[in-house]
View 1 (cartoon, rainbow, N blue to C red):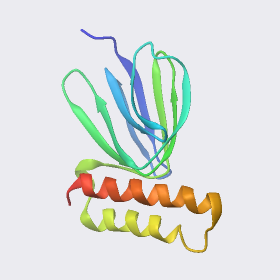
View 2 (cartoon, helix red, strand yellow; view 1 turned 60 degrees about the vertical axis):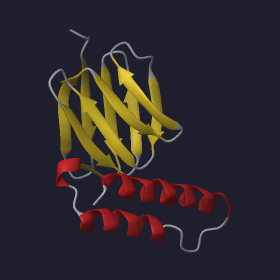
View 3 (spheres, rainbow, N blue to C red; view 1 turned 90 degrees about the horizontal axis):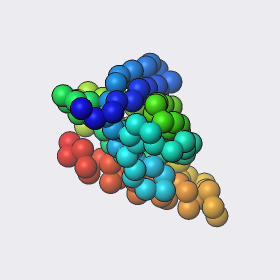
View 4 (tube, rainbow, N blue to C red; view 1 turned 180 degrees about the horizontal axis):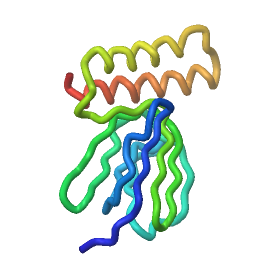
Amino acid sequence: MADMMQFELVSPERMLASLQVIEVEIPGAEGDFTAMADHAALVTTMRPGILKAKSATETTEYVVTGGFVEVSGTTTSVLAENAVPRSEMTRDAANAILAEAEAALAGLTGAGRDAADKRLADTKALVEALGL
């Protein structure tokens, strides 16, 4: 059996997960990556996307809109801006996420606008991937 690691996912509203997993697929701000047991220590940010936690028997998916990830050899901790189990995601919730990303562009210029444009593009890709 593969080595296990502790996975914790917390949003401002609640703790969504605290489980033993084999790997966690993370939508990193600089690109997707997979954290597994004995992964090098890492702290990074997330972009909007689908986070997948794989145990020996199942894969659980979560929709995240951003946040921070800390990976160590034994634990992956995610502090999400917003997160919801994919099974609970509705069309209305997806539209609200998209509207929030669109509203963030209002009045921005320069580097702030560039970051908001990227977030909007990532959010549109997320909503499309959800297929709602």
